[in-house]
Image 1 (cartoon, helix red, strand yellow):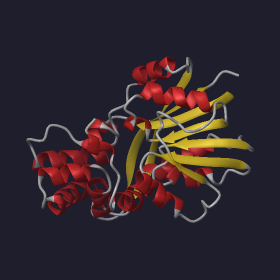
Image 2 (cartoon, helix red, strand yellow):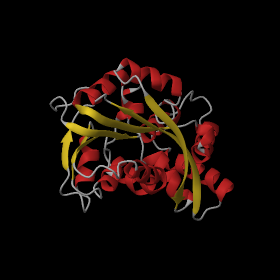
Image 3 (spheres, rainbow, N blue to C red):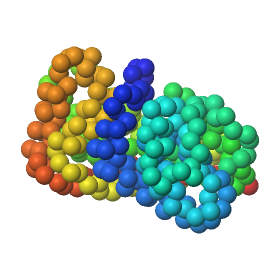
Image 4 (cartoon, helix red, strand yellow):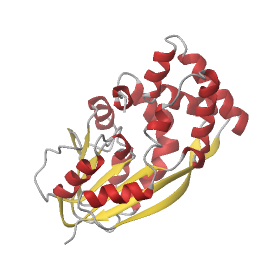
Length: 269
């Protein structure tokens, strides 16, 4: 994974949260939080919390103490400034070396973050280590680009603009960990012999083609990728993506079809 594929700095956290949060992440945050409605007390750890979209959904759970971590401090800073999250404990932390004691949490969650981990079995072992016996580990990861057509349209537009570029951030990372067999093997290697993997199709609201294109091109590490290809070409790339999305869906508001896997494993009691 190129080093820049995991960098969320500058204006990226704000643009990511504003333009991609409601469309891509809020629907699946609500889904993950709903799977924990039976948890009425205890401690919950979120890893790779990003800008706090799942954190906000989890904060509605009554009686649960939430700790949210991320490797990128600018993302955490953005999350911590959100209203309604004052009770959440935010910590910068590497998911591969969590700074927490063994068996301290009733649940560990990760929203669309495992794809960024350079050693997923190691990160999963850390999740298992900090879970109490009987604790739950839940995460989600994107399905194929073909099953997420707004991403496919965007990548096709950029590929036409830069035909010599061999791969894109969205292909390598967000949609690069989608094989249930590999996921099961990684969890088994980390001490989770049993897991449930569910394909979940949802729809996300899009304000406009321009907003979504701005999110993809300027609110993810694809921005760094585009600027490396053409230092002055970011507006042109965003316009090309917006035009392609508008050609498919119109320039105004629409709902995007989304597809992801939701994975649940447990530490034996």
